[in-house]
Image (tube, rainbow, N blue to C red; front, side):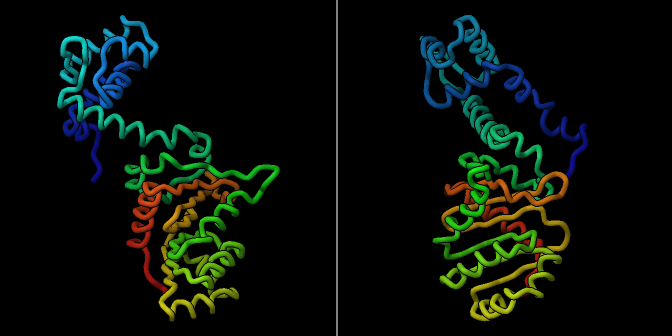
Length: 272
């Protein structure tokens, strides 16, 4: 459901708490420090490297908003402060992946990624960006090979037809892996005319391959395994970028990719 400005205002009370927290540089820092442990003024000074006057001013504002309380020399969170600090931490974690690689996100299309997936963006916080360079133009490809090398269950979203991708996939199937492949009409048509299709059909009869078709534009390339995930995007101008991939081998990153993949499964139909 979409809300107009008036609806949003009524629902969230003009975001007064959000504005209160984010309109200051020091208030969020104080709140997040207190979410880890109680602090006294000396502890704040040491960790923030700020003068006492600035810290005390921020503490007084948070205390007036009933987010923190003072017990003798120590400050701690109130119940309201606990809730606000948890929400603030999640917001910063969500934004971190985009803030830490702004140029990448600004130059690539995210149109194919469901908006709901960005609500869990904090799960990608430990991702690395693997880029080609003059010494090694195939760094992303090598990451795919490493990822697929020990992968038993491949989940792949394939937006373009490229022989090297399909050769890697088939090689892994020959080693005993399983595959769920989601692609579009154009790639599916090329796939059916290719040398690879008969092998995929044979593997599907063995229950090792499932191919699904998604109508419309597909602007991401995803490889998801039990041990990691690699994600490529398209440039804003529509060209596929095989020079850089987002790579994540943490449990959180794999959870994020599985949630994304499940969304595409829901929107696609099985064709093989």
